[in-house]
Image: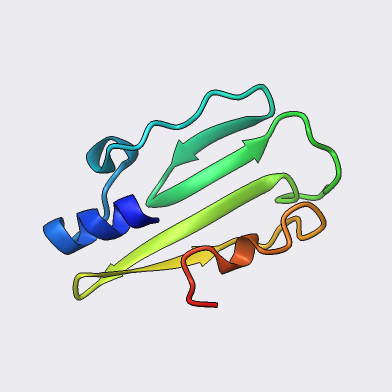
Length: 89
């Protein structure tokens, strides 16, 4: 989130992967994408099921030059602290 924070301070708006200098990793377990935030979808893990069970997202909202992040909590069995990404917790 630090790359996005720096972009927001400088540009006062959301920055795409390319804008912020981020390159999504290559993986045989996840596919990565962006859409006003960041998204990882498992292509191999089956621990969590359901419509969003294998999807992790971090939404980004920019207000008055400050980014606020909201992380999904779709699979706390595998990632119990993921929901705290970008928070001060």
